Image (tube, rainbow, N blue to C red; front, side, top):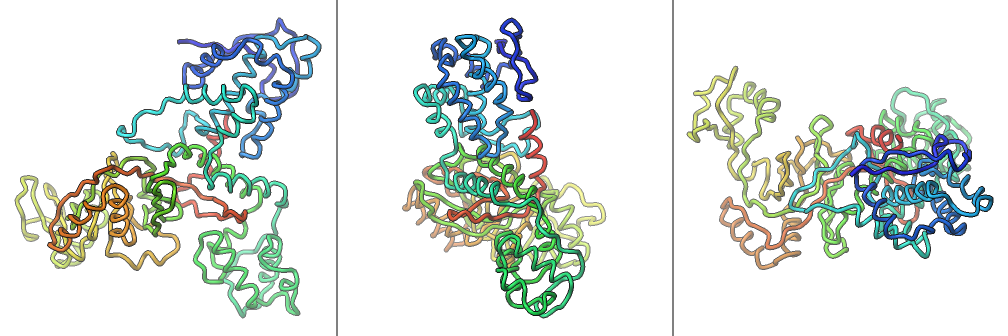
Length: 514
């Protein structure tokens, strides 16, 4: 169905300008969820819906609040609508073309708050399992829009994500816009700075820390401004905690890089993550296993309450953990590991060539494609072909004691790991895409507790016997692997993560393009 939106065409969203009634032209609108919603909204609402100056003024006021969500009100034709309101009294009623424009702006704003901005590039798109069913956006959007018939603010507030994560970050963004200066002092590059050193760069460092409140004025101006004292160490450690850096109180390359990020860049980062959280809001179910990729951690919610949390190791920047939503259906107890071809070629083969005993030491067996086991001497390791490697269950197995499985086209899963020492590092981007889970058995137990505690007894028996077997959850559990790089604590403290997958800038550009 081809839809047209009859509207005013004075460089929409740009300068405030009013054309004569007979200057209205048609603007084509693609047949998508927004177009379908507009058509349904026209039928549901009376023709004179926007004839009320109070309602039109309310729309303008609500569109203005989008700035607090990191959105640009001009993208929703705010200057043009203000122009329409100004001439409303002169012409006695809103013209049909202007009413259509108001409806389009209203629905567009609600859609972007509810679902996030959609664009052709679909930066950071999330893969959804077909098992989750299809979400019908048009009816949901129309229901939202009609809920504001008496008071438009009701619809706007309902459209915004009702999660603490979004509410906290939105409020922190509002405060940051009011308080952040145009610039923070920069710290010159050089060798690592640490306590006890004297350098003119330390004076720059103190100025930078003072500018953001990490260092009190009295502490920043001791007898020797170039001395790196214990006050500076404490301030740096606080800064590092809030930026997901190694907390060592020293100013190395990574800490220096984050110190020199300017306020405008931080505001852009917050806007980008408000957009991410809008896109994720509908996926945040009351019962959910959430994998926070950028922070390399997991949270399991049961009926809206945090039931378990733990650290993770996620994909390297060149082998990223995919963003997806699926359903956890079963676990594998005492798993074997069939080594993927990519990992065999990039990681295992060089080790095998260096160490003739590598396979034996790790209990890895060789098979041909007919399933027949081969000895290492039967393989030409300079040009291996027609083989696969499988690591037997056991204490050294790369998947540990349990694998948590869910459907996806990336062949990724959550699993235990013998590489426990890596959980003590800050930026845990080590895997080839799968998610390694600290204390994975406790997580698996929590998943079974959410559906059937009795089924966990079978898991414990299999573990004790060392048997490798799949055990299905009586009730599947949603799992969301998501990525964001900024959030705020309830008190408004902003926390910034690293952006190892370099997703911030492309998403910001995609979310702000017309």
